[in-house]
Length: 423
Ligand SMILES: Cc1ncc(COP(=O)(O)O)c(C=O)c1O
Image (cartoon, rainbow, N blue to C red; front, side, top):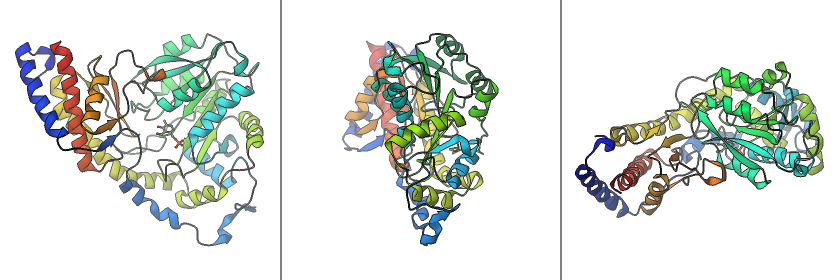
């Protein structure tokens, strides 16, 4: 029965029931974690044959290059061709990073602040104010990068088709607005795929700042866990067609294809941007780990084969996301105070509970031994005015633990909502 239509007496009865369930869970001294989008050990086991990939030192040579030595700062040609195949861009538009795409994102922003980007009139640190658009709910680590360099973070509401583009188009008229964070496919945490219209409007933006930059983090570009691969437009060529060739930097990595923290990452952009940044990266390093690049290309081969490997991940991830949906449908849907998404890819489920109760619900989770992403983390500065959005990350725990964690989570959501209604 919906909590919203319950009488005070009914609410009190329900509260007694849920607190008894909560106490019983607490007595079990649980230690469960649904905080971050980490693959489970079962997923990593499925691709660990990659560890035995290299046997013969002769395999370290490709295109006349010895991967064991310095050189090829932008990456081995085979690795650049691999990413171009996956992202649908050209090899010359790619730059291979180390094991983390987040580092590449950080470095682009750092270089914008210290020296400026290709079209900057001055380094961003010389600007009186730098504003950065943060579609929210979004990825906390993105927001933290721009906060770290002193940018003012501006919340842009998310819609079912991506960031609210009316708001974005209005905000970019301000020359102090220097960029926007985007996770265009299976957004973190909403699991939204930006619509064709949203992508077209991004490519056709007319920002006042000449160096306005779209940080297009395509972290979940091949990460379907339910159904077939969903093709996705190449933002780089769309920006080029729209007369904005240098406006976008795209990012991706194999963190959730092979091993998180031990994969390979990529930045893709116009050839002019790649040339400009390759020169700057040349100041901080000689070359990245090409042996790992080669190992990855040998194992992943191409986009088609990568999609086959992603099916292995889906075989583990799919059932976990189904647990989340099943428990929420059973426990929360009848109560009528929360809504959530049902993504077919990515690593998260985003839930909006009764306003003003997310912090309390997560405090209860912690008390019962279930660690969740902190309330507010999906908004700039870690603060959500409505105190409603919660990110569920179901990938790490085994199914049995996840079922328990979800049960506890739902009880905590209910108690926090009931407390508010009974006030
Ligand atoms: C949207 C998004 N981008 C980037 C990352 C991290 O990527 P990497 O391991 O390549 O730094 C994550 C990890 O959860 C993510 O959700």
